[in-house]
Amino acid sequence: MSKKQLTELYHEVEPDVRRGTAISGAAQVWRFINEIEVGDWIVTYSPANRTYLVGKVTGPYEYKPEWTQDDMPLVRPVQWQPNEVQRDSLGTTSKNTLGATLTVFLIPQAAMLELLSNANGDVTLKAANIEIEDAEPEANPLAGLEALAIERIKDLVGALDWAEMQELVAGLLRAMGYKTQVSPAGPDRGKDIIASPDGFGFENPRIIVEVKHRSGQIGTQQIRSFLGGRHKDDRGLYVSTGGFSKEAHYEAERASVPLTLWTLDNLVRALIENYELTDSETKRLVPLKKTYLPA
Image 1: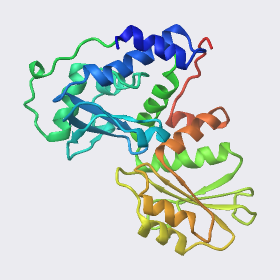
Image 2: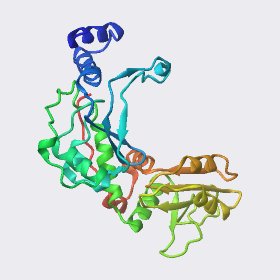
Image 3: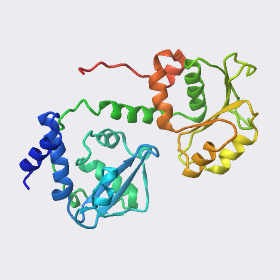
């Protein structure tokens, strides 16, 4: 069917959506099925790991009816490059252009070249090898500003050094109603911060916090080591900006001591939620400004 027919079908399935939303949604489905060609490059983002995967389309679209329950029955086969691209390794311009609110969109040529050179180590890629046309306008440009803002805040937090990250977590806990003790640099026997209502750790809940600020994921061994020194009445918070493995999440779920795992995404969202209650030192580490937009 034509793109116009697809738009009308979209309206039949979702009669309450605005015309612009239907046009935008139909255009993305159309692009996924008809415009993406074998040999085109594909990029997808993992917010949890803050990494991009880059691959090349190897075949036409396929319909998988058994995947309808997951809301993703249309697929394209892709051969992925072996290297993931860390968002922090990209330049500011590329970061800022990789935040479109459309599900399927064309990214600028310069960002594509930077992603490709990071993914396969080939720094000799020529701009002439990749043709990028202008993407269609977004139906609601304001809709994805929050998601884009969160990613940019993650960029700010990710650029902090370890000591600053520790102070940021402590400041956030104070904004949430706790008093904190921050361990000095050096061996801390598995506790970077102690948070409690009284500030001494005598009054429950006593929260023991470990902060890891690095790109690699935390595995089961680190979780077990952290839990090994905990008292039965303690509560644990493990903050890892590099994320956690699936096995680490499983280890935390079955731990005898209640343990919460915070990725960079969890940390930033908690910071946004409690930002106005943070002290001046915490705001200095991550300066943010509230902006009002029409609903």
